[in-house]
Figure 1 (cartoon, each protein chain N blue to C red):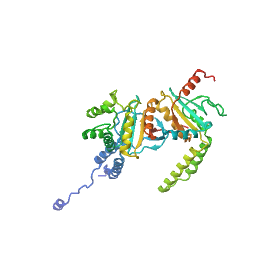
Figure 2: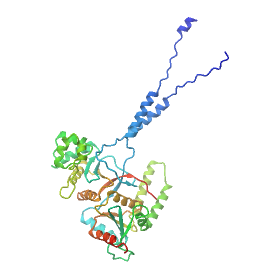
Figure 3: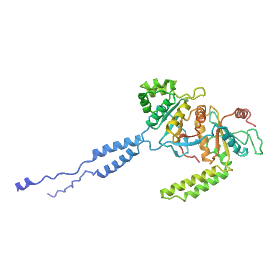
Figure 4: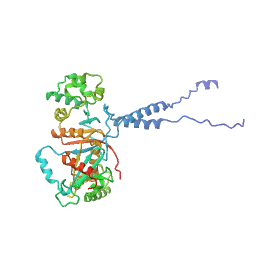
Length: 202
Length: 214
């Protein structure tokens, strides 16, 4: 009768505020999401103190892989579609409508023009890019397809298109020089070099 | 009494358990957090001289020999520099003499900063001046930033800043080039150019290697 009554504690926690915050966070991340683009080649960019952000739209990226292979990509499928149609107009590369669509969906391209049809028909595009010895856009003085691609892209996307070079740290300067010289020959003198952020040591 | 008890409405608990919902949302948040690239990669803007002859000549005449520094980037992370013209000709001390240096703050940066004291001072002053000008007004901030940029480029391109010529051998890596370009930014040098590696430069490096006692 004189028993001490233990007060029954309610263990139920109100989750409503927490879920409110979570939904807010979720919305934020969903809206700001720009997904990591699939890149078949691994490029380890050098660090730089430069803090200029890369423009997100209308960007032509030239990848230079460690071994010197050159690939290209554009930021959107529309850009790639325009590029493919421009190449057709310039009589450089004749793709039919279906191939243009495959081309537009490909994350990165980079095969010599004469093997382009075979590459587009293949199921293992990325593997071909990384494994095959013939992959990569030729940009030497004898056969410079890089110039064709870049000038076509310039025609297709207009003056607002930016060119960025994303090269691996360990790439030899000889390759970079070839790419830069190719760009210079077609009067593309302003471009961006993609780097990752690094602090100034002082 | 019994009747009354029977008609008593059962108290419904209107509280909904949110825990599973929170669990799920947490999962989604994590997914989006890991998949997004919030940090966009940085870039360096670079403009190369055009291939057209007329522009080239005009640029060349601007490079005063006494204010020129040539940086040679060689393989195995080696870096050399010399001041002035490669074969001498002006009254500069140590003109054309090759020095080996290193990357980073104690090497090439020191050299460049020493040859560019006016601009470094001016940039520091500019930074101090604009540090106090921070406003919360967005429109004003854009204006201030534009002014800052304009004045910075004015300092960088002033007559007293050195002109730097960067030359790299084929065996040099891209990282080396970026590091040197980085130093240009750190040392407030606005006038620099990436040039072709000439045979003369090669001979110079070889001579340096063979006779380090010079």
